[in-house]
Image (cartoon, rainbow, N blue to C red; front, side, top):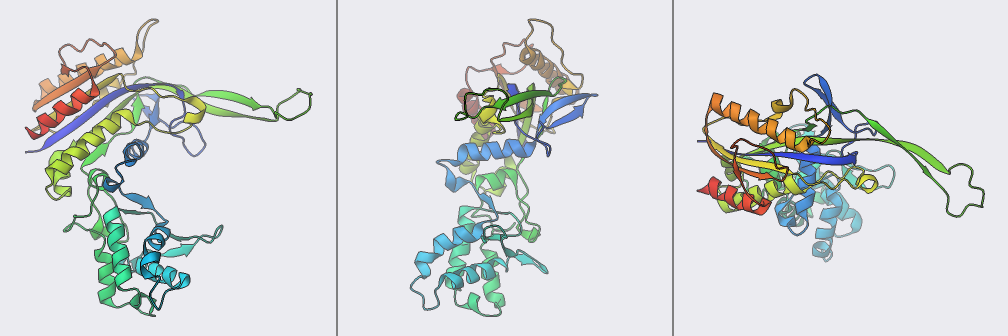
Length: 381
């Protein structure tokens, strides 16, 4: 029996540029025949990961091309007494070890940055602290062998075994278990995600706006004619519908059956999904606006339900009406219609700061912490 935990949030951001496209404009999309504001699922997931990384680093992995520097810091003190040690040999051993990572002809390569000479991998590696430690231990153990012209198959296997695959997940972290990872050079080390996150879209149509700005040199002479710098920044203001779903059984499986760690990960994700914000252009706009409507559903014996079609017809408001409230009422109506049509067991908890008329949709609670507590009871009970 599948258990899905779904979270729906309505978040009305003040003027902002939270997630930019390649031209610097706010991302958008056509939906229901009108242009909508958008920020990507990748943007949402990164915000959640960064929000909870501080103080919980052991539960989160690092996506980086700069693994050589991390391994050098770890290994230098351990290998400095070795007869073969030198800074050059350490870099060579680490580079050779990383070049072992891969399957067949596809290998990770270490390259020197043309700008600063820093050694970096040619691809981003998404590795947990446990995997990095295991990789460092394998390099330390085989340091002398890695300096030879050819690496033995045994040493190469020790290196690749440091990274957990489908059969061994003891070193996987919450973010890899939740969001998965893809290592193109080692598909056997890939991890299927327990969580899916939708692109956030506005419940209403939007038009881009432009902010023309100027800056004046504080130390220039008294002549004030003209600006010393000028430009434009695109922005919008939108009420976003945000959605994500977590497969509880898959999350527990990804964490080797550790349901306590899975519960911690679920709570961390749900809280982060509500509280974390995209960071784009926030120094310029300070659009720190928390969701005023959140619904969390624990559902069984049915498929996941993204409620974006509640906004297929763009929400329009009259003077004096609340965009968030009207969007929440449309969302509740769509949820009830789908429940009547498709059924399924479940429980829905609602935080309704928008004071929307939900027509009996969900159980209202006074705070996010209450919602999280009751969600975990519903999942595990």
